[in-house]
Length: 167
Image 1 (tube, rainbow, N blue to C red):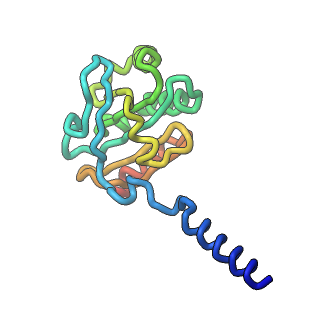
Image 2: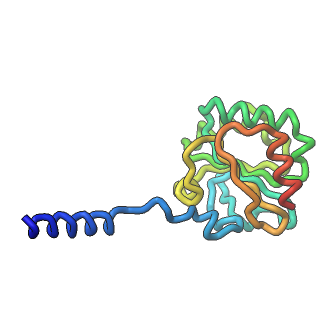
């Protein structure tokens, strides 16, 4: 009986030791600067970290063109665009290229020089940020350091406040 108990105890420790832990911090927490990424731009060129303007607050927004919460977030941000005119905004999606283009055109994104949109063809950002809900936003200060992240629809004033306190 004692042998069985020791065997079960050892088996339990082995299984526990081999189990994957979710305690590993997201890449954004381990590397709190704008990550090195490559997105497929709306004009089929590449967008990388090097294409972002330097010395500007930056927001990376991960979205889906068919997500109602993402649409509401975009609507509210564009309605308060003066609050974001000095923010470099990168909108990234994993959805098909043609759906991204339809979203880009529907919202008239081409008239906003500080908004870039691209397709995350390598599915880099969801595991890097451990994204669970859309829209997802990562805010970086002018030095490229992570200020905070938001998941789900977020009030514009909360985003603006985060930029002001994190700059």
